[in-house]
Image (cartoon, rainbow, N blue to C red; front, side):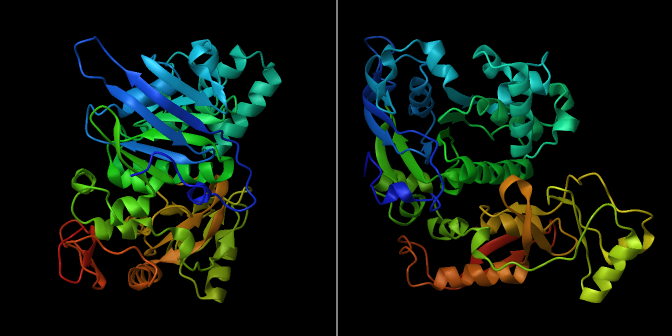
Length: 428
């Protein structure tokens, strides 16, 4: 068990040459006591969060993880101890001033219903005295960052958005003043599983680009190992049971408490650490909305492809029609289809498999920063990568109770759901 990420580990997930815009955070002996007779909600916690890393707080209900996060921006005042952000003890700072220097995201975005998307995002910059043109430019920049078209969304109200769109706007608002620290409290807990998966992938992509210091509270260990550079497993009183990389949390739990919290199937959960960027990608036949269906059809037939990919001017996928659809079409789509089988480069291979279930092509479109198209992955390639990873000599040793046999893919005849199972059986 460790309360501080190692120097080697601080480089985890940080691409070489990318500028870190986040700052380190140190909680030193922090305690929160509600009444003299009750046990502390947080009991003398010492924890260091490296600059530019995503750190996940997990643990059972009531263990103090949310209280700990809220003490960082002093929505909850600590009873004792110090909180040092970028070398400055913020426990003596004005609380409102501190919070304007941090982003904060809650479930469903926490948007003000009477304000437009643009007004919600621009609220903190306006408080900081930014001029109107600078705020407007920042709003459009952030909407692009969270994959929302500014022209289409800036003047809408929250009630006109889906749950996933509201959450995207919430993230954009938290980033509006370019804070070095972003705090997120169960940010994806109020949306459906498919939307949650896409929001998680977008969060990975955004962090790869911005390199903020991000603290996320979640109850979901799968989400923790997917998003986190580091995972903190708390017990009651915010006592740290393990602070480690996702791989080590899964493969080498520090004690029975962590092993029980991770649950059964930890050996298979490690497969979820494999990312789309590890998989070889195939090319697609790319066209623009201005082309005719006949031109697109000719390109597909000449290349021997069954589909063409329509990209916008920012190289983002609009549609992925088949040659049969092209033969019936009068023009190519100009509006982005909502249910395209899209995965980010930071998505797990298991998420990629799930996405392929809704794909007519039996494949998924891979997108990078700001949703730009980077290639296609198919089922066979993903499964081959998973098997190679499982068999690799450098993989963490499987915990007791798992096996190192090959993995197979099973599809439910009733629902069509894909599950990854070991050779011995037992769906993940």
